[in-house]
Amino acid sequence: MIKSSIIKRRASKQIMVGNVPVGGDAPISVQSMTNTDTKDVAATVAQVKAIAEAGADIVRISIPDMEAAEAFKEIKKQSPIPVVVDIHFDYRIALKTAEYGADCLRINPGNIGSEARVREVVASAKDHGIPIRIGVNGGSLERDLLERYKEPTPEALVESAMRHIDILEKNNFDQFKVSVKASDVFLAYESYKLLASKIEQPLHLGITEAGGFRRGTIMSAMGLSWLLREGIGDTLRVSLAADPVDEVKVGFDILKVLKLRNRGINFIACPTCSRRGIDVIGVVDALEKRLSDVNDSFDVAIMGCVVNGPGEASHALLGVCGAKNDAIYYEEGKVAGRLPKESLVDELEAKIRNIVAKRQQQTILKI
Ligand code: SF4
Image (cartoon, rainbow, N blue to C red; front, side, top):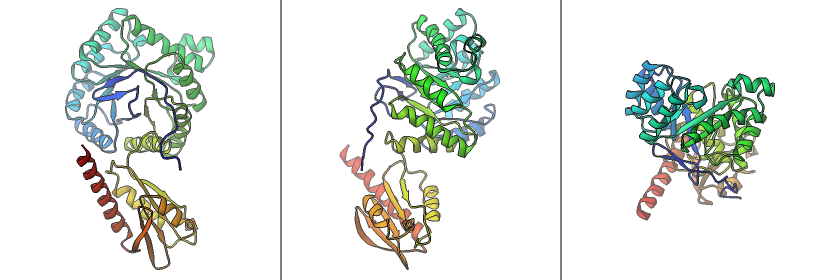
């Protein structure tokens, strides 16, 4: 079994979003975005906290107007993770939110008007020591590019990104990351690849408008994994028309599968069939919910019977496989006892938490 990722990441420049490094040799960060009304401070703070508890490194909040900018001031004070403010067109909102402690401005310099305004925003970002994310989207390309290229193409998306990049570079500003998102996975893939060959700044990956939970998860897993497999991508957001907490979970799952990052227990489970001795689906579902707060990461195998069970359970740190009257329990590759079916979830949760606590203790002792 290949234990660590064989992916060689693209060498990119590192920037800081608050205390989170993005690019270079930093772990690929996972982001999500609130979908509350930003002006509703209590609801937005609650969602930011839920997103952070799910493990997100960075959260993005849209700031459509000055009232939202004022609400952001309070939200930022209560956010446990760095906040990117999402701003379109209005440079005054960028200045205001930078003053209120934004950790990154998501704004396209080509869309904010005169050179003087751009200079002001860049000067503010420099003064506050915060980066900018340029976000090009296949759905909102400049009209002249659409006329010339006829439709959103990788070349058109990248040309749009390069225009914004040129403006920042003319202002001697290199603390930026870039995204070229599209809702078509082929378009997004080719666009990011082309962009990666042209700049050294970190790339923020995303498949935009990917759809609801199921379709969006599949689209994102496919599009993002093609890029990540080629070493492209320094931070990502999975866009789902669903709970933002799910975006975080799916983001980590994509990185886990590629062995690029770990968070949470990896449940290895069989699909079950009529040979199953235990309710694998129910047990996995319950454990995933109960253990969603766990940051530590190791394999736990939940297998239905002794056909494939012993192999998987003995390769995981901890595992069970169903038998006629109970479940055979494995720890560190060896049979370590039997567990009753009725209390399997409780017993496994306790055993997993026990291992997590032991590993934490060992880490503390090492430090
Ligand atoms: S491990 Fe057993 S229960 Fe699970 S799918 Fe295979 S044969 Fe069926």
